[in-house]
Image 1 (cartoon, rainbow, N blue to C red):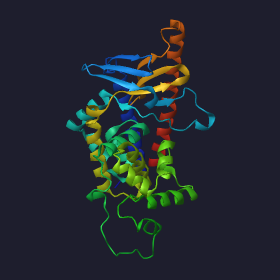
Image 2 (image 1 turned 60 degrees about the horizontal axis):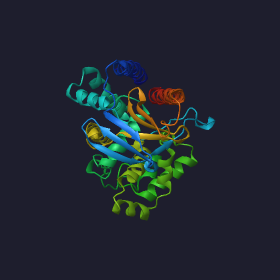
Image 3 (image 1 turned 30 degrees about the horizontal axis):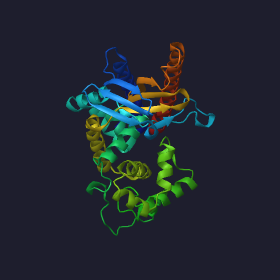
Image 4 (image 1 turned 135 degrees about the horizontal axis):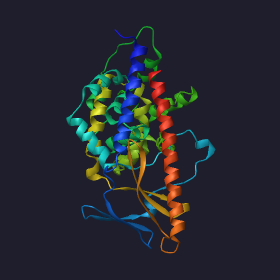
Length: 341
């Protein structure tokens, strides 16, 4: 039998090679680009979209995600998250991989079933952005049900002797994750006190704040009001708080549901528009193995600004997104090293 540490080192090398292959594939000319046929910024503070299937949409700029093209010093070496769609070619690759699972992926899937991150990465490719986005999509769509039968812990009066720390912390959980809002917040408080929040590193700060500021009563009101997006963000935090306590059955179930929801993703999601206010720009963005990519840019003042000025702004946006992707890949590598070393 190969020693555990050597097995993990071998897996890490193979995984890095595979990631390189994925990047080469998507860097090839002719890869599918945005399906946006036309995108305009109207005078009424709305974005007008026409897609390749002839459908049209009007998006209120106030309701879109607003980003910044500057990164503060304290934000450096931290993951930058944008709530953007998975690219069409990424979804196509998932569907193709589902039909043609090769021997390498089958060999790699078993040892990484030990962790939620490792298992999903083996199936999804990409970095932390895919991990976060695909989990959120699967939770929001209802495909991944954290209160489903496989996620429920069996009732038992058994106690370990001696009592372990994991038993002490999870004995009141009805599920393999702290699904109860009060218990989840209690677990978060313990982890923070012990400086043990690595499992949440890279989770967008607004997600964590929403989780912390939502009571049991608030959560019931959200469910009654059909606020699936907010609930998905809260449940993501709970899932990652309980990730270290998941067994192989729960991890396998999560992977299956995440893959199914990702492959259904393009059916019900519009292109994602990020607003950069200081540049008066609306940027259609998507996410693939290369990271965030720019599919279309329009400016609110483009009719009144010289072409050279607009080009400078486009270059600034390109440079900024390229820098974000570089920093995000560094964080991905750190997580990979922490997982296998």
